[in-house]
Length: 489
Image (cartoon, rainbow, N blue to C red; front, side, top):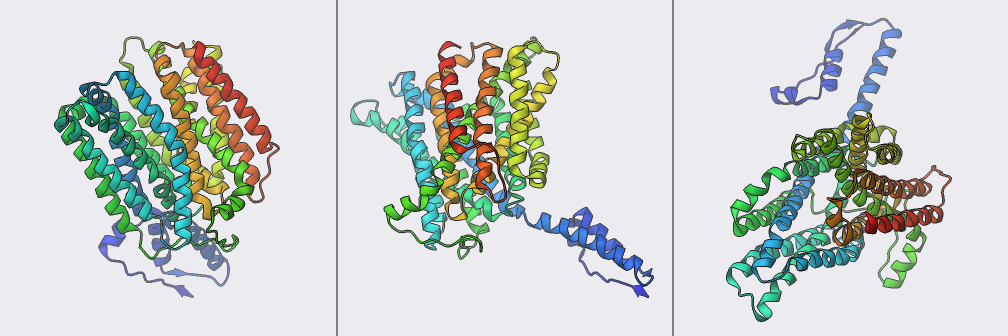
């Protein structure tokens, strides 16, 4: 018996095929004299294994993921421009630098409510068939317009009377508009990959974030030399252009339907929505806590790594070394995303967070420990997995119909943590000791670990011997201790 499989492929498709698909084609194209049973059975097994691999690969719509990553990159760029120019613009308009700090606190305080609210509203709109893009497009247009108006106010306006207060008002309006479309836009990740492969898709967002974090110290002078009008115009155009591209990648008739195992629930009134969400309050609190711990662990562990590198390499500019650290986070995102997809996002997050917290705790006890490279590796892996797994985590523990609310709640906790960073920690981290910052970072990782571990009970066929109430109490105690230590660092 001769088995011959003819495959007709043009030159372009042949060059773009993944290696494992080329292997299957070559294997199948051979004319083999096949004995009756043994080789046919072996050939079928090889084909079935390869098909499973192909299914995993096509379960990530990489073009869509890249479009979503482009929007996140534009968002990050505008925030970099905003943070670089805001103090100077306020000073130019006669405001003291303390006003800049107050504005950041107000922005984060308002965003704590805006993020989950807009996520929930986009969930409701999607279930009515209106989709999430009205929230995304509307938020981007308002943000882009406000971003362009900010430098115009400074250049054209006068720092007297009511006109003087237009600047802080538009700064806050812009920040709130940016918060308004983050949750609806990140929910689109669910349309880019299967649930299992969400960490792989989310790794692209971590790569973009890591890239901007790595090049930020060396792009500061370039951005400032552009001047406010050009820099803010670039940020606005980037937002609008990336949103336009993203809109083309998602058909307008594509709706969010509940999975077959999840009943479709229609809620229109506030009371009905509140009643429907009642079983999920504990879950939302855990998501909020995980976001808070994620923000603090990112800030504190980065500061700890910076101080550790300064101790180990006293004659070298630490800025370069920290940039390499962020490049490594970026490079580790995709491989660790693949691991998370294979073993489960929750398990990957719990393992990496525990390892990072352990390493930072040891660093706090023995600041001159010879295993410092291992600590950096553990922190690097922990930050990469936490950043990559954030959105998949929020989507996994909430019903599909409330996915936007879950994402918004996570980033609500994230911005709540940023509020405390601006109000208390950022001014004192530079003078704090390595041991103190390492303990702050370890405690922050532990807050995330407790919340993520307790949320395992919300997953089907998953149990963990930690109730949400116990986890939230323990996380709250750690949070209070961190705030107390922040007063004495």
